Image (cartoon, rainbow, N blue to C red; front, side):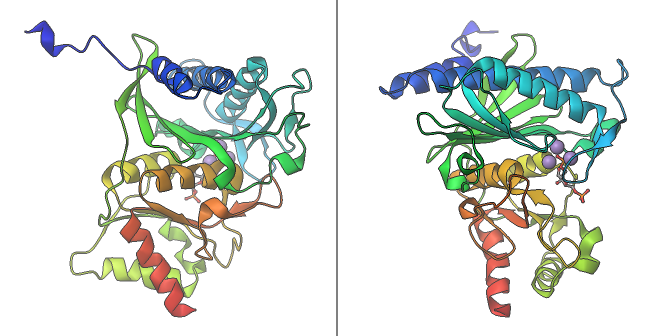
Length: 335
Ligand code: AHG
Ligand code: MN
Ligand code: MN
Ligand code: MN
């Protein structure tokens, strides 16, 4: 049992953030502080989810959010935890959450320079079954003196300075990327209470025969989507279907193994289901930075889409470069 086998020089998220900050001479430390607050919210939400069955946090809250979802008790708690962490960081001017109809403007910190988008708990319909869920986030940097108006938020994903998501699974995973940077994966070490860099520079495999979508919606799908999925099933070696129903979990698997995740717009949900600011755009940044692609149902780069309202939705196809290209090619053929 050689002690040389034990890594005593661990790269924690805290250390990683410090190292990133020193690389940028102009950095004020504000972004680092914001990330520490994000990290705390992830740890807390993970903790409540793990204890949910023990402390009566299962089931519905009895309310619904602005996009029409029934809120689970944990949706409400996750949202409250996230808001408290962002507000108290003193670095956030405005916050958009799936669970809040309006953007929350934090006037107690008028100098704060960041806008944060979040889906506190993605996949919450799975919570009571103990299936993996997670938190999705995106961060915009605002001009000096920004008041946190709609214009500060209705921007394309190309303007995000950072984005990522967590997945509270067998262990809590954090996937994070900065604009134009690598995608890094961290694993929570519960004993240390730290996220540890376990998956540096994640690159999504160029192709893989796995598709992930809710085929129960196929009655409403448009022709190109039907043709695409059928082509995968009729391939010489047919694709495997994998659909958890928590985008964070389906996305995490897709990042690691390759393949494609899709939630297309269809005849019933003509704008799609997933929401641009806090679901589609952050995921698009992660997938592009990992070498994959992400497009909407019009085959536009997802990351370039500008929402008109903070809760606007979109169809999305994201995953391995070649797998998304197949979708694009079939749609182009249909014109
Ligand atoms: P949320 O739990 O944040 O409301 O998001 C739900 C999303 C996403 O997690 C998942 O990919 C998708 O909804 C599942 O939708 P279906 O149940 O329609 O398949
Ligand atoms: Mn929801
Ligand atoms: Mn979600
Ligand atoms: Mn949610």
